Length: 365
Image 1 (cartoon, rainbow, N blue to C red):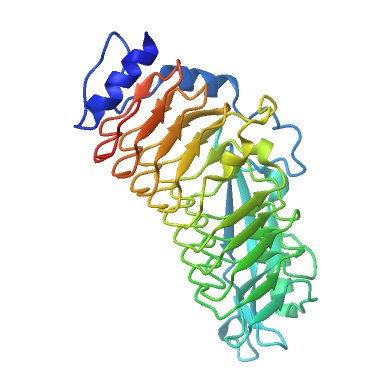
Image 2 (cartoon, rainbow, N blue to C red; image 1 turned 60 degrees about the vertical axis):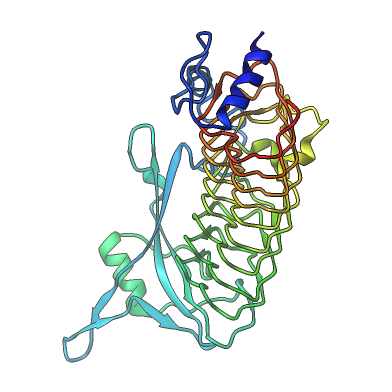
């Protein structure tokens, strides 16, 4: 019976939103109690105790990368800005503070207040970079950190790529071995970089790290339970692989928006036993305007789709819901003009308003 109701609701949703039908909320932008209850039961995920880096899950912990402002006195007792300095290769570095906060109690993880060397800006003519060179930190910078924070600088190589550090650069290749923190928009608008490997050493990747770059291939070797918002938005991405797909709990908002991906990466899980995978949710606009996607087969661990997740996927013709998908939010498949076949499951509980509006080719449900 619920399958029949789902089918009717989908047809009606083409025209707009509707109210509660047969006691089941359809086409309403409301929280789904089943999902909320499940999230409460599985906070942190089934692999929370298995991460090499215990603060890897950004749905549980907030990581902040802050460039430390450093001012020292010169021989004339005048203040001199030493926030950044150049090395012998013309690259600019700074000291970055790393702070991790628990979202549960908003308290700082006190054993992880660290001060690290990070890349702030590359030499403008750099086309290729490695990140394992030994960096000489000016003595006055070391002294400042020691006196102000009563801590020493961690390591003698760069382990941080600062916010927007490489944005708009001419970089073609980069070896990230040894890097542990990648800041927000670190590679934004790097038009000439086509392939990046995130090594297992990386503990945190900020939002929109590769947005609007020339990236075509991304190899993720680190633990990434939550794919950052806007990670590859607007790139040329066609290939992405994860060393730990079973850890993935959430795909961030706009993570793969407007990319030429031929299918969502979770399509590779079709036919696999995903009983040992985390429960998966997909954030708003995650695959919006991915016009090369033709078929979507949702894995059985996918429980919820956010707003406009597949909106504007104009080549999409077939959707098969996973057996445990219980929510698809507003405009989820809006303007998928080639969509003609939908296979629902028996548990879909909530379908947002205008979920199929503009799906003018829809024939089979």
